[in-house]
Image 1 (cartoon, rainbow, N blue to C red):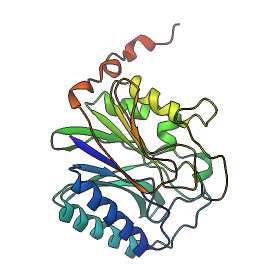
Image 2 (cartoon, one colour; image 1 turned 90 degrees about the horizontal axis):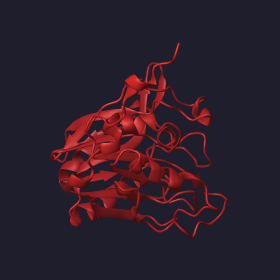
Image 3 (cartoon, rainbow, N blue to C red; image 1 turned 45 degrees about the vertical axis):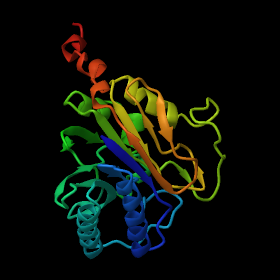
Amino acid sequence: MIIALASPRVATSLDDGLSRVERLLSQASAQGARIVCFPEAYLPGLHGVDIDVLPFDRGDEARVLQALSRLSRTYGVATIMGMERITDGGRQNVAVVHGAEGRMLGSQTKNQLAPSEDPFYVPGDTRRIFEVDGVRFGVVICHEGWRYPETVRWAATRGASIVFHPQHTGSNTGGAALTEWGSAAAPYYERAMMMRSIENTIYFASVNYALRFPESATCLIDPSGACQAYLPYGEEGVLVQPIDVRSATGLIATRFAPARYAEAG
C-alpha cells in the first residue's frame, strides 16, 4: 500500500484550510496514495499552543465533514483528518476517517490530553481499529503517542500494521531550527517515534503542521525502527511512501504477556 502524510501550514480561515487540504489530497492521489493523514486538530487549529485558532461551531463542523466526504470521493483516497467535535460535554480533539468512496468510517478521540489542553477539551474514552483496502490501522493523537505508548500497543495487538499519529509539535513564533533528523541535541520526539515502531514491530506514521520552528518532522518509521522518509523541516508538503504490510508483523506487541504482571503477594 502507498500512504501519505500531509503537512499543511496553519490555516488562516476555514476556506484557506480546506483549500490546503484539497491541494495536498490531490498531490497524494496523483502519486497513488490510498490513505492520507493530516495533523492534529488541523481544523480549526489546536488550542493551548501559539497559533490563532479559527472560530468553529457546529455549522463549521458539519461543513468540514461534508467537504471531507466530497474530497475523499473526488480524489479516491481515504482521509484521516484532525479536527474538533463539539459535544454537549465540551469540545473533543478527534481524528475523523473517511473512506475513498466518501463514507465516514468513524473517528478516534484523543483520550490522553496534555495538561495544557485540559482547559479546552474533554477526553474521549474508547479506542478503535480502522481498515482500508485490507490494511488495519489505529490512530493515536500527539501527546498519546509521545507519553502513553500503550495507546500504540493497543492497536498493534489488534492487528494494526500501521499507527497514524496526527500531532502538533513546535512553534510558529520562535525556537530552535532543527537540521538533523533524530539528533540527540533535539527534543525527544523523533526518538520516541522510533520506539513506538520498534517496540511493536509495526509502522508509525507521524504528521506535524508545517510550522516555522517544528520540534519534529513529518515522517514514516518502518517496523525495524528506522526512519524510512521525512519531509524537510517547516516545509508544507505531502510525504508519499509505500509500506510493506508483510513486514509489519506486530511480533513484539503480540508477545506482550499481561498475566506475567500480577503483583506478588
